Amino acid sequence: MALADRLLKIEEPQTIKMAKLSRELRAQGEDIIDLSLGEPDFATPAYIVDAAVQAMKDGYTKYPPVAGFPELRQAIVDKFKRDNHLEYKTDEVMVGTGAKQCIANAVLSIINEGDEVIIPAPFWVTYSDIVKLADGTIIQVNGTFDNDFKISATQLENAITSKTKLFIFSSPCNPTGSIYSKEELEALAAVFVKHPNIYIISDEIYEYINFIGKHESIAQFPALKDRVIVINGLSKGYAMTGWRLGFMAGPKDVIQASEKIQSQFTSGPNSITQRAAITALNTPTDTIATMRAAFKDRRDFLVEALRNIKGLQVNNPPGAFYVFPDVSAFLGKDNIHTAEELCMYLLKTAKVSCVTGDAFGDPHCIRISYATSLDKLKEAVIRIKGALEIL
Image 1: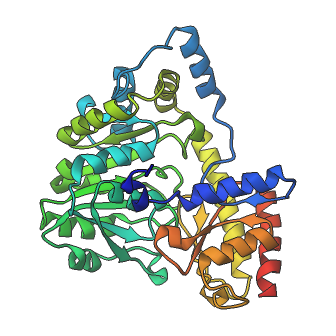
Image 2 (image 1 turned 180 degrees about the vertical axis):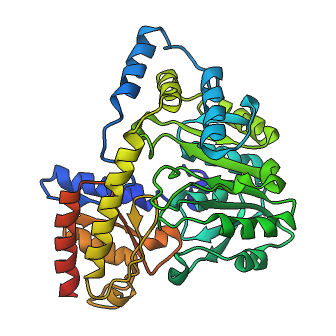
Image 3 (image 1 turned 90 degrees about the vertical axis):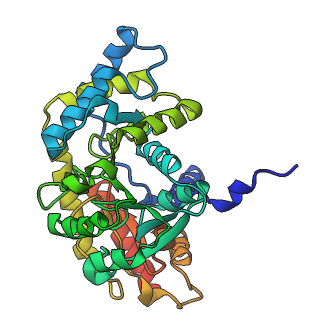
C-alpha cells in the first residue's frame, strides 16, 4: 500500500523537528535549553483568558462562521485602520487556524502547476513547502549578510519572468529579524507596478516585535493594494501561540477563494479563540510594549554575547526574536560539514537546540530563538561557546 506522492514534495519543518527532539531528550532526563521554536515564553494576558472563559459561559460553543464572526472581522478591519492606516471592508478579511493556514489558503487560491513564486531567502520554512504542495515552482532570491539578508529591487526585477505569479516575504523576518524600511518597500513596489500580474503575500506576524519604530507594510502603496495579501495573527504579539488564530486581508476574490478552501479543510477556527480575539484586538493594552521591551533586552544581550564567540558572524536584527549567525567558520571541522550537523553537535555536546539555516534557504547559518528567559539565554551562550571552542 503506497501513500500519496505529494508527501515526497515536502518535509517536516526543521523547527518542529528540533523542538520535538528537544522534548524527547528532556523526557529522558536531559537538561536541554530549547532555542528552536519561535514561541514567546510569556503567558497570554489575563484579560484575553478571561474573555475566553466568558465566551464559554455565554454559550459560544457551536460551529463558528468559516471566515470568522462578523464582530471579529470588524475588529480586524479596525486594527488595520488604527495600526496600519489600511482600509479594508469586512469581506476583504478572514480568519484561519493560525497565520500558517492563512498563507496556505492564499497560495492554494493563487498558484497553478508551473507558476513561479519568488521567495527571498532566508525565508520561513513553510513558504516553500506550501508552494510545492500547490505544484508551484520556487524561485529563490538570496539576501546577503551585508544587507541584513534583504534583497534589492534589482534582484527582484532580475528574478521576474513571464511565469511569475506570486512573491512571498516577511517583515519583520523569520528567521533573520530583518525589517524592510518604507524606502526599501517602495523600491520593491516600483518593480511590481511594472508587472501587474504578480500577487504579493506580505507576512507581518511579527509586526509588534519591532525595535526601531513604526511598522511598514507593502500594502500601503495604492498601486499594489488590490494584489497584496497581508498575513497577521495573535501568536507572537499577544503570546497566543496555542490559541491558533491568524488572519488575512486582501482582494475580495482571494478572500472568497480562501474561505472556500478553508471550508473543506478545517471550517472556522474554534469559537472560543475567536471571541477572545475580539477582546484582544479591541482592548488597549501595554502588554505588547512590555513583551517587546523584554525581547529587546534579550536581543541586546544575545547579539553581544555571540559576537564574543570567535568565528561567529552576527548581525543586529531590528525585529522578531531570532538571531541568524553565519557559522561558516565551523563547517568542515571535526567531520561537521553542514549547518544541520552543527546543530546536532550543539544539541549533543552543549544541550542547546537550534535550527539549521538550510531549512530557511541559507546553508551557512543557524537560527537561534531568544523567545525565552534571559537566564536561559545566558546559560545557553556559555554552553554554545564551550562547544564551539572545542571545534
